[in-house]
Length: 127
Image (cartoon, rainbow, N blue to C red; front, top):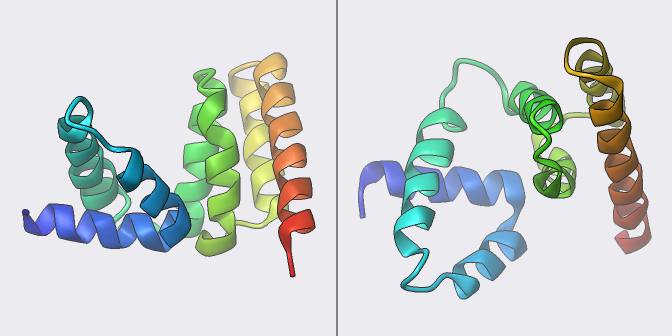
């Protein structure tokens, strides 16, 4: 394992939580092991690990980019991560308003629906 992988795994666990990462690791197979290493080292060990901006700001950017590019499947995961990154629901709606203006209302609308549903699930799961 590289230092970047070790750092990436630590950041990934900090942002997404142990339960999510443990599920992903358990589902990893020979087929996708190289891909999992790639994202752990590059996304988590380089980009998310950088101290250039805060985790809160990274959450907002990530959510806006996912919505703007139509990659909706990862939005619920990153909404859940806001509990660990400090991005508030207000931060998230502000990011999605930017998406509406710069990338399109339908993309923002769908992202907002996913966020609302995920926040409701998170509230239900609270002890």
